[in-house]
Image (cartoon, helix red, strand yellow):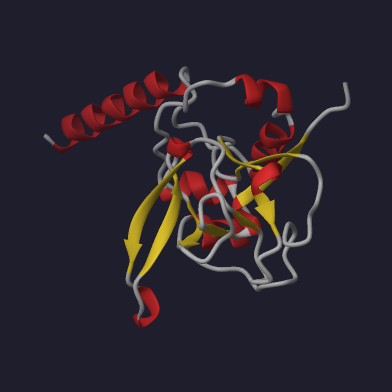
Length: 185
C-alpha cells in the first residue's frame, strides 16, 4: 500500500512539474534575468501602451528570486528606504518610471518635482489606473499607501500637500522604481 502511494505521489508531482514548465509561470527568474527584462523596456513602447497588463501573481519565493533583498523588503514587505540618499530623489532626466516588480509604467518625469521630502515625488501617476490606493495604519498613523495596480507591489504613499494641478504628492521609494529614459529622436 505504501509503495502504491509513493508511486502515485511521484507520478502526480511529475505531471505537475512538466505541465507547468512549458508556460513559464512557475519558472524561477533570477535577479539578473529580471534586471535584464527591466533594461529591455523601451520608452516609445511604454508611451504607446494604452492598457495595463493583466494582474501578476507570484509566490514569495518567486519575488525573492527576482528582487534584491532591499527591493523585496520595500516592494513586498512594505518597507521604506532612507530619505535623500536614494537613487531617484535628485534625478532630473526625461523619461518614465516603471514598477521595479513588473515593469508597468507608473510616473512620467513631467510630473516629478522636488518636494524636499527626501524621496522622489510626483503630482500624478502616468495613468489614473496605473496605481491603486489602500489604507495604511502602520506606525500609529493613517496614511494612503500606493501599490502598483498590476503586481500590487508597495511603492510608497500619497499625501494631499503637493503642487497644482492635483495638490497631491506621490512620495515613492526609488527602490520600487526603474527609470526608462526617453530616447533621442
